[in-house]
Length: 339
Image 1 (tube, rainbow, N blue to C red):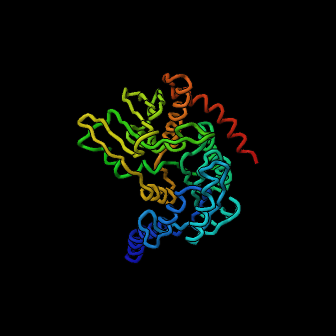
Image 2: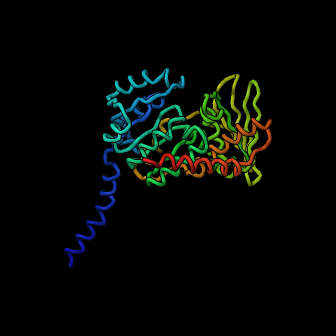
Image 3: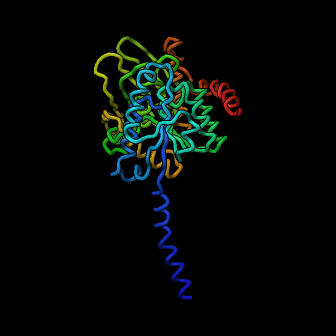
């Protein structure tokens, strides 16, 4: 009896150790799309022999260059491919070739127009994937991606590096601020043909806004002028959140939280390391740090901003934008699900 009790006690004591060992099991990561500065930056963080915590044990081993005719892609893919090749990353000529060599995937293609096409191949392989901003080139495509991932039982999330910045997070659950009753965020704003205006670079500031405000935006209105591109949302609780895109002047990031106890500013930086730690944690646990619902609301907010601009700045309903997009997404999902 004592022997059995000893064995049982040993099993209980060893269980946490076993789980820890499994958590630290080496993971081979692959990158799809070598046309953004995020690629060498993320590779450097994961492949650092001194990496710790959520970064530890994850190594970028393969990369597929990809690339499109978008200038931000076409003009940079060769440079960043050479950089990661110099870091010891094997360069392959297709997504299927990459999938054979890796356990997890970072979809980094800077051109959101090809994300659905690329994600379709990754989802079929059942590999967990982080999809860099923008998650897609349109709201219907973003919805289709989440539907397709669900069909293949694959976990993924997408996020800007602004969301996890310590400088932004300090505004949340802050005793000086109290309950956040409203927020304003700002940052550099540039556009890319083929996607809604705010999808390409403004998403950093929009994601910061939703990090502070949370989901629940009901209407969106936008005013675009020579120096700034401003989008304002009204939340169901009556709170107001505003993103101010800087077109001229000093292109810096920032945020102000208006609270029940005080007003505090911050959010002046983005953090690749903080984002990569969240990616690493996701690869280990399968738990996404940002819900599909919030991500889709962020993209509905940005797509509604374009619609408001077309209507001369009138408020546009998020619910109506989402309902219309879901109809289009159903067609895209059906097409993408075909062999």
